[in-house]
Image (cartoon, one colour):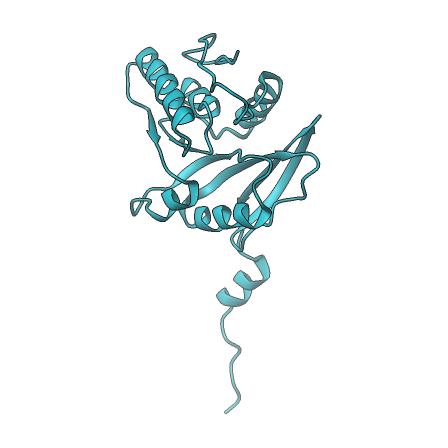
Length: 207
């Protein structure tokens, strides 16, 4: 049984998706993940996106810890229903509708994002059998909608290869927890040498 670990709704028991079609993040991994995110100072006031949300536990944990807006995206009907239940529970505790649920395919949702909406923190926890090319497509569609300094967390099987990062997104860390590996990425920084060349004044010409 999953629960919210900390924050305004800490200790609240969450509903789980029935059956074996989803693979919830364990409390051990979730606690380690959010400890790291707290150290990055990306949670307070953040816009958070939880793709392949399952029960929505990562997203609602973010809301409990101070995120300003959380979007849970889940295609499966039963899982989306559980997301709505958990979102409603946390929204009631917080007294605000901070968590929204979208029943949609991840890549389709990203192609319909309203102009100007950008996320500070993104969780991507797809089924382990999702092909790497499909995950790469999701990352590609996501990249234009990241705020400066955003953090993207991809959860995969430890036996899986590193995700294929698109242009504009680069890995900065990874951590393995038994069968689970978390990959951390951020928007790519402009090349310092290129910036220097662009800012340099043209050399005077002889004449």
